[in-house]
Length: 460
Ligand code: PXG
Figure 1 (cartoon, rainbow, N blue to C red):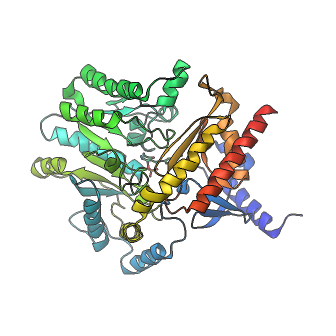
Figure 2: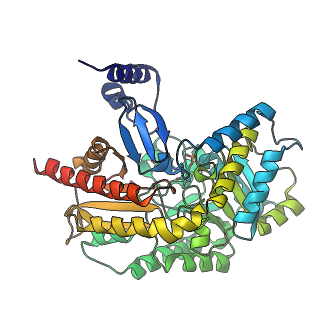
Figure 3: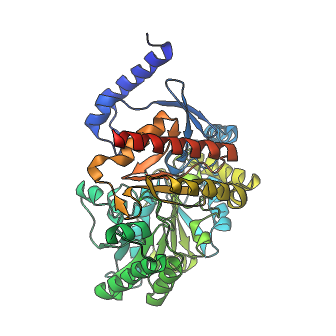
């Protein structure tokens, strides 16, 4: 007989199945199988509607950096709701939370970034950055210098602008793609090995990927190219960590040709790499940094674009009115929670703890998973990790994609009470920064068990 809790769980699944259209989900599939209903969460554990506790190795969607159920963030939201639940930042008005947040961000970010345009999401941030980068050149009499170069397999969001920056073909099939966005290859060592069926040096992969930028700029003509956009470490594409020679050379190329550099920090920002920003990790001083997710630890939707002094100066001098903005740009409750989240991060020294302790511990444990017969590569950096599931390690041979090995493994993870995501046959993690060593042990144990079970399923 079903317990009361299971009946409640079935109810929510049924109601949800009838009326909710999910993001990035096969509609028929979810109607048939029902969604996993998450009812509450505390620290690094989710509780589903059956009462089961699931270790969240994804920090929600790469965002709940300070963990769930922090009373301080909830109190700040309540207090700001009472004091000023909404006012806008259009037409020469502002409010204390947005003023405070913009000043805190200027203190935290690489030293050349001192202004922020606020949005409610990373996608809106990337739509904004397209307009800002093009405007920077247009107001200087170069409207034709409007091409943005991005990378294949990149994810920069789902709106039409941000989706166009992204380099994932299935997303482009769903809607119009804006013109004047170009894609070049990503610095993806493991994939290069799989394509060749043998090893290749990481330096060579880095060199080819940077050379691709030079070639595309030369092909288009530098007078056409406004900017290059990339994540410091590519997240949703499968946690792709660039070789050491990649970023210094990209930085040099952008400087050499005088094109703007956009570092999408939506995932890498706010401690994920063990530094405040991925740009700090790679020693970049980008012209723009789109931010979101960890800015509020996902407690409320807020994002933005941090803008460099060289861009701000041109816009101040020649820009005039910037005809762009969102009703919720710099929303006071979201901004107040972001301020409290940053203060919490600073007070608890979380970024230093990640860098000195948690990330090294995680990476050491994670690297051992490479010994598993299914794992072709276990890579990671900071609080990010990926496992490449392969058919034959020595030959760098992947599974046929229609075998759905990543999804098989993901289902086993969930049965083992571990929330880990599959990108094709790459299993990825992006745990909350507040994970303790004991949580990491549990994470890796459960991941190992899920790999064993995947191997068993494949053998039957
Ligand atoms: N840039 C990057 C680098 C991202 O990862 C966005 C922009 C867009 O942010 P918003 O807030 O509009 O979603 C993202 C979002 C996944 C997954 O399955 C990743 C994201 C969003 C949803 C799912 O890995 N990243």
